[in-house]
Length: 278
Length: 278
Image (tube, rainbow over all chains, first blue to last red; front, side):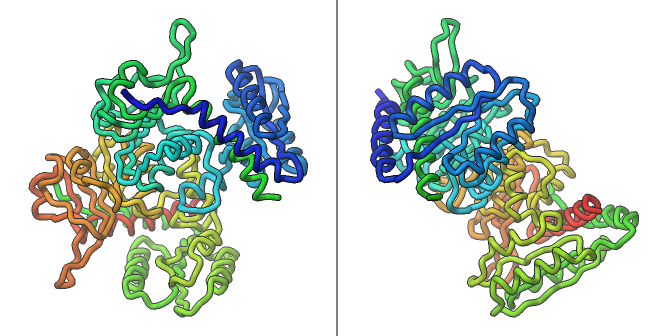
């Protein structure tokens, strides 16, 4: 039976450790979330972020903008936040309504307040062997949980399923930097199971697929980023936990795995950029 | 026996096609190479670029700077070239002497004249699902030769060996955009042959390894970017051509494969940015 990687316990420990760092900062760090429209999941995510920020001693504010806001409306708000010296970190909750130019909005965030690492400047440092960048929250959470369980990825076969700019691609880059051999699979991959069967580490980040125990390698590390709801509204990951747990060496549950670690990654980024720009 | 992919013939055809585009441009496009120091290989590369630019109707100039030049010396030259309206494309021949800050130098090149695609702005567009970027010359040459031989990579298992910012990583991104499943192998990869044996497409870009026919999949496409010299000074790629040719479906020779295609990619980039910024 796999070791179940406890994202909640690790998140809680990280938040407590962050609180100690925060107590040493003269001004309480402040994270501002910009939330446009009424997407129910986004509402929950933002509330969650507020809740855990508080535990780490981070002040938060949420700027709620109507669904009908224009790209320029959102940009104006972000520019004000960039100029506001009391704000250390700016988070634009995604997805933005479809009529808004997400790329332009994200690039408006000042590099020094870019807590998600989504500005072009940061992306390019991350991909172009640069230094001093912010690791986006989910990949950061993934690295933290690997470290916690002392899993060294160097030389290992890591298979990332999903190629998003937010999770798949940056996670691939981070594991490559740690000397894993990295494969990026996606919706057009043929014979996905041939890749998963040989993988020492699997990062599943699609929200669509179902990985079952018969297509994974005994003893592998299964990091489940996906979020799916079944017909009863119950939250699941991309993995069939019951069958995978019997085969894997390590597995993250959903909920309670990478979700809390993403929160931990976010709060670490808040404190990192606050300290760096003091 | 594999189809031998003829990089020389394709380069020549591309240069001739470029010449037709150049003839429609009122002012002859101009490429300036900045060459610092006396690296013999760099001297040859630059001479080669001059020679083939001429065939495409591209004017060239080479600014030769002494080995002892400082980072600031090189930056000053590039700033002048940025401002010079007669210059359409700037190429900094790599490697620069070790005491020079390569990243800063490359980032000084104006985005509109960045013929190699090595500025941060360009890198980030390439990795971050952006548009309107310059594909670095070698990956561009690779895509062109794949197109020439009508090789569709979608859904295929593509294995890139080498993770440089110039070849490995951007080639991985380009093949991923074309819907290949992409694996990045490197010096820390364990059991390289397990990856190569399952690869439909191999891009070998290390200059160090030797891929032999017994570790490749019958019918695969073998794109050899590596450059190695044997004890007699003869140029080879990363593949043992003799044994691989018998197993692969397609193979690029060295010399005569990806080398000429890199030249073609460079000249295409010169004309593309010239036309775009007219």
